Image (cartoon, rainbow, N blue to C red):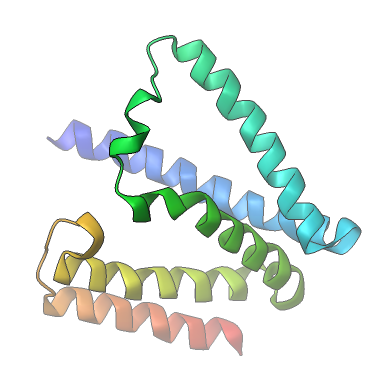
Length: 146
């Protein structure tokens, strides 16, 4: 179990690094080619890589896509919102402020999804430690935005 947590934590940390770098790069593109142009370049390069990875997987299958709940298929559209908001705000607020607001909002929504078990999430009741953690993050938003 501990090794699984360490491995998953490392993957999550890698994702966090990628998000921060993507924010910086999206900000650069937003200044140069506009937010919409940056989103386009972001998704085209991601689509090319996804095609390569799917082809390399050889066992990967998209046959069951019709069984995915309809709301989960909006992930790509949500990705456009994410990339657009990062590209637009990172170059105007700075990475730290933009990402602190983004992360604080992620925590608030995640707590609700977990607590109520919405949209297929495993229900995990809200405990005081989570309330305090989200409160600390919101305090961080305030402190980094000053």
